[in-house]
Image 1 (cartoon, rainbow, N blue to C red):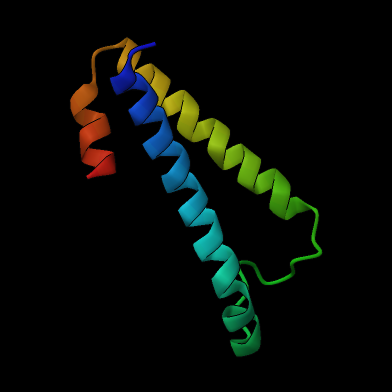
Image 2: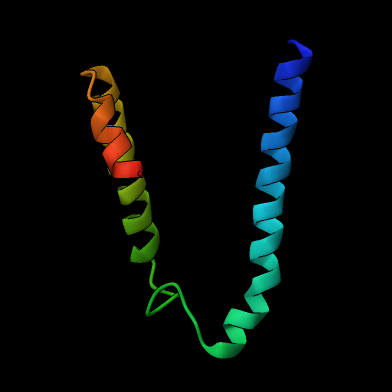
Length: 78
């Protein structure tokens, strides 16, 4: 692996960690103000819906790349 690749991986790791630490820093603020991601956090179907949404999005993007529909991906992301 070249120095450039190591640098890219390091930047990705640092960015990931900064996002996670930022989210953790905001937890107490959101909790104090009563914000919740879902109506009932103890409902187990929340996880199923979330995993289902991730799988559907993954299939969509993989199909778009397979059939050379890169423009669709650009429209969805941008």
